[in-house]
Image (cartoon, rainbow, N blue to C red; front, top):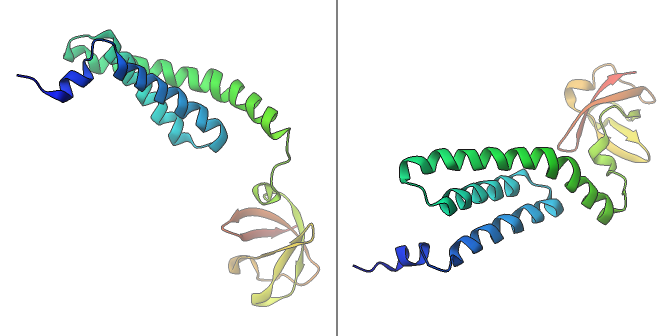
Length: 159
């Protein structure tokens, strides 16, 4: 009995396995530019499946081999890829660009502008609203330190 799905998966020339490794490599390279962990982990899972399939072991051993390849992939990812290659590629393409100000707000010192519900913090000529929980006792001109920055709202303490 001929089933097209099984014939495709176990093709003699290994085309499916070549596509699996190509997809895994493409995903991990795309992760350099998009900086998402899920692309890398999808790539590592694809790599582990490729390795388990490539060895063509009995079914009862495939799960263990999958986990071994996944462990090797995760070790490679954290030791080499994330620690060295990703940083090198990012520095090469971004030319050591400064981090966006909004991503490095915690720890910055600002000046309170306004009072009450309209209180904002001024940091390098930018105004950001202060969380209502933090507004008590603040007056215009007070120096504050940003402790948390979430969804455009600053949480501050007095300096």
